[in-house]
Amino acid sequence: MDALDLRVFYSSAQGASHIRKNKECQDYSGSYCDDTCAIAIVCDGHGGDDYVRSGIGSKIACEVAKKNIITFIKDTKAEVLNENADERLMRLEASIISGWGRSVRQHFDDHPFTDEELKDVSSKARKKYEEGEIEGAYGTTLIAVAMTEDYWFGLQIGDGKCVAVTRESQFGKPIPRNDKCFLNATTSICDIDALANFRHRYSQKLPAAIFVGSDGTDDSFSNDEQLYGLYRTIVYSFGTTDFDEAKKDLEDYLPRLSAKGSGDDVSIAAIFDMNAVAELRIVKDFDPEKEKARIAEAEKREAEKRESERKETEQREAEQRKTEQKETECRETGMQSAAREQADGAVSDSAASIRR
Image (cartoon, rainbow, N blue to C red; front, side, top):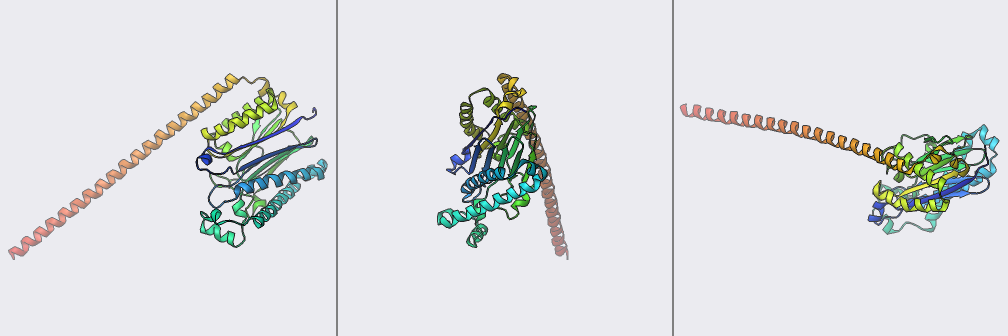
């Protein structure tokens, strides 16, 4: 394998819905690169009124993870990691959790909660905070990837996605999923069982590129294939233009992605081996016009699917309304019949009384 030419980038943008609500960006991203390794990280602070410092929590998580990963790579020989990667990575995850917890506690000690921060917090969360369980206020997800000349690994707790691009131009999600992360539910570094909910991937087969993105990025697309289309375009952009120019283009695009898509904060960070990227088939054979047409066709199919589902839903609801209306009419008819029978009975009773 040729020598690596590792480059990194990261970018976060405040979500369109957050801008409308005057709500801070709760995502935080970062990266690192030197002669020995490259690192990319995305953290997504939880939404909701109880997570009053999740934006701070995501920043702390990013900084602690970067520091601990750098130390881990420096102190762990590749052959040792190869022998027992799972155990070593679990230790790294534990160090990130404990480091985050200490930093969060220090931040709280220096800056206790204000009345303004707590005015919309639920009574359950307020009770926890008053009893000293303050970590939930800083709750966040975390995805981090690192690459050296010998191996790469990824760590994750919570939602969001890691997408790797192989040297054969194949896209995939290498970090195992956690079924606890579904719809608006997610695991968190603030959970008591955070270590059990961390998952990771380790490999000596190096990808050409690795992306990590917050769920605001993922949720802007209907399926993984559309998400891969975004990353395919980014790979082409970074592989064919000046790196800083490509980064600026992406930074300009992310707010538009949020406005058109999820409305949530959006973050993307990545590691590139530029030597491998230059040789990728998706870079050499990439046709911008064909890609636009492919995306447009995919969007058209997705729109047709949504329209078909909408019509089916409307039809089911209409049939349900008809059924309910018939049931109501039957009940009303029954009630009217019963009332007439009761009235007829009353008349008969009266007539009988008169005759007597």
